[in-house]
Structure formats: C-alpha cells, structure tokens
Amino acid sequence: MTYIPPERLVWNYCPICGQKLVHAHDGEADHPHCAACHRFFYYNPVPATCCFLRREDGALLLVRRGVEPCKGQWSLPGGFLELDESPEEGIHREIREETGFHISDVRLLGVKTRPSPINGAILVIGFVTEHWTGALQTGSDVMEAAFFLPHERPGLVFTVHRELLALYDQYYM
Ligand SMILES: [Zn+2]
Image (tube, rainbow, N blue to C red; front, side):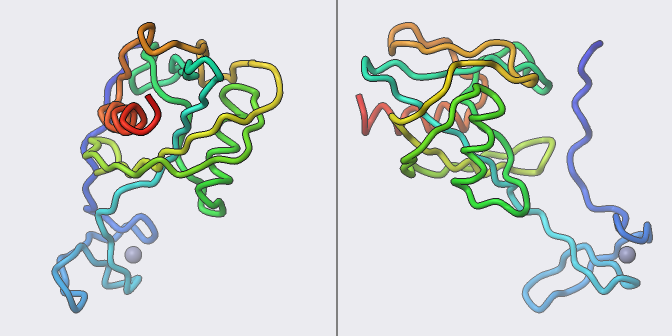
C-alpha cells in the first residue's frame, strides 16, 4: 500500500461539537475558538521521547521503523508520550515495546523541536542510558533493532534525531 502523508494540521472545526471555528482573542493573541464549547485551539509541538542505549564498546541501539511515516528507515528507539506518563515513564515503555529491554538510570541528554507536517511540530526529549536488562526482541512497530559502532551507523531518517545524535557525539564520543 502506498503511503500518503496526511494533510497539514489545521484547526478548522471543533473536534468536540463539530462547529466551524472562528478566530477569537484569548487575552494574548487570536486563536481558533469554538463559541459553543468556549474552547480555544492551539498549535503546539507534540512531545515524544527517544533514548541512546550505549553499549560498553560505544555502540548505539537503533531501530528500523515498521510503521509509516518513514517505514523501513532507521531511527532512535522512542515514541510519543501518553497523557498519563512522565517523560521517563514514556521512554521506559517505548523501549520495552520496541526492543524488549527494561532500561534504568536514564539521564536527560537534551531537547529538540522540529516542524512536522503531521503534528504541526514535534518536541523530542532525548535520554541516555548504559543500563538495561532483558533480551533484544523487536516489537510490532519495529522491523529490526541492532547495535552500531560509530563508523557503522546507518543514516537516521528524522532531522530531530540527527540533531540529538550530534549532541550525543559532542558529549559522549
Ligand atoms: Zn465545540
């Protein structure tokens, strides 16, 4: 099946009641507003997490995506935060789902944002750890997971991941 990317995110209609939104002033600026629900709609980055799992020899764990967008391309393991999660809980869950590993002792590496046609923008919180248990077992949204030494690394498909990798190399290489 050919992947067709979704249209750029625009707030046109209220997702709750379906009424056409109008621009209204929220005290700071004009934003899409539903008069029936008394609710403003904002364009905000969507938070996600990723993690650099660092082996003793300096190799990093990367995953080949099993889902669109960018199916078949390499990325850092991670994903979107759920509403009820802390960033640490989110990255623990994503790593468990995608690789079967139970990570611990994660440290914050840095945070980067990029425009995203699907979400408006994405905000990625990057963590690092050298500590995990369990056997490598890829989940359904991942085709393949493997450790790569610095000179073996495949190109990462997401700009925001490449930016975090540059930060990682600056601090850890
Ligand atoms: Zn409404």
